[in-house]
Image (cartoon, rainbow, N blue to C red; front, side, top):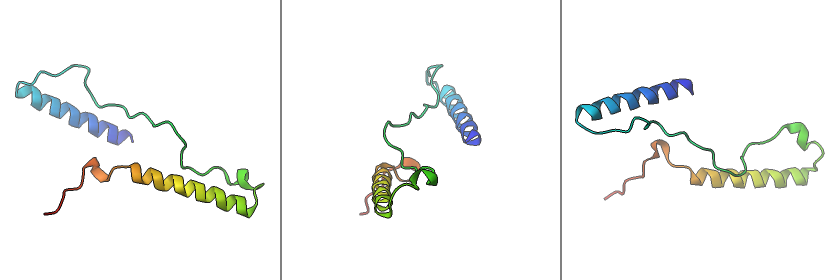
Length: 89
């Protein structure tokens, strides 16, 4: 993650320099925006010992709920690169 942040900062610095060369007026405080996590449930399983008291039916129901949550999360996420798909034609 650290390498990614450094590469993003270098890219931002380079683009700010190039924009300044071309006469753009930039804010000094502008920089990469920090991502804030969305409030809500995470789709991460817990410790397996915390499920030991559940029956198999309860475990299957919990697994189904978690998988549904994961599928909803995957549908919300953007495709790689955050770009919209182009229409063919």
